[in-house]
Image (cartoon, rainbow, N blue to C red):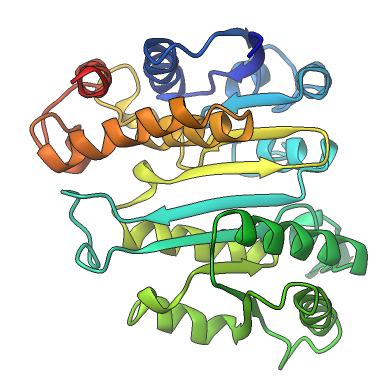
Length: 337
């Protein structure tokens, strides 16, 4: 395959450290790419730019593929979220978050061999950002659910389920209370499901889903839901398998895809060389599969599984003592063994 061009956002806090480790591992498996570093987050704000500068958005639009480390958006102060801005401007309508048990990693369900994929609508719902002050003492946010947005999300989800040989797709909703918005979402789900009879289609109310996830998570296969519920559910599922430090993510659009670690920028440990790069690395594995490099993706994934299973060279958050660089070199070594 031809050499790829990949936009990279080094991000804030531990972002540059885990990006360096990830690119080192990609290089070690022979993935050839030209990386174009772009600004976002605090680094952009400090230069008087928006958290997600228009120049960065347009460059990613041109390139079509980006690998992104965590960025920081200050609370309050009128700054729009860098992540939300990027997703909306590039119309990255599907957020895909796998939650898979890794051998040797402690977690409340380490013995269940969990393998759940959460697909979250990424551009609508309350995250559309339509807010106003109806009165000095009353703030209102408008929830937006459209047929078009829902239909394309479900089409993507069912097609992905077929490609990955999944057996069940469950939609998460609150249509018993929000009968119009969530009702429309649920209606479109079952419309889409009719076209994929080989996949079992189910629905579950969001509060019940949370309870089921912390009691019998192994019952779920693919979960698909709205933006706000998906934000919460995907973090919950990450906690089931060891935490956000292990959680990869992909934002998929028609013409662009952005792969990112979903955890924060962890400024408290920035520069100490102890950050865990696994989430960004596994996001890069998703990127490799998206680009058709399944052999390289398999190689990295198997190397991570070996390192985790062995347990001798893990970062501090996983109960080990390894530095970011030591962990990266161990993953590279495992791939050569």
